[in-house]
Image (cartoon, rainbow, N blue to C red):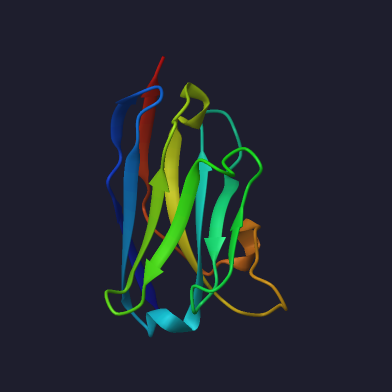
Length: 126
């Protein structure tokens, strides 16, 4: 089992920045690819960003590319999502997730991930 706890969400004006953190406990953190997903009211949970076990490969949804940065610190068992130039359409509950590598590349869909955090609310005002 891997337990994930997100933090860092909040209310920010458009154009502002937030940094989300996700602290992991349980199994060996460095054995898992990590992802960030988000879910707005009435919408399905969608992919935001992912990072490989070593941190050497990162992946982003087109909608956040160039604005968001995913990173991880395996010594601290933590994955981060730096969000800059935030837009009202970024408003959602953000979830981090952990998945064991089962494919050649890191997964970007929800079924790839085995463990999920409880989510943190990000609200961007216009």
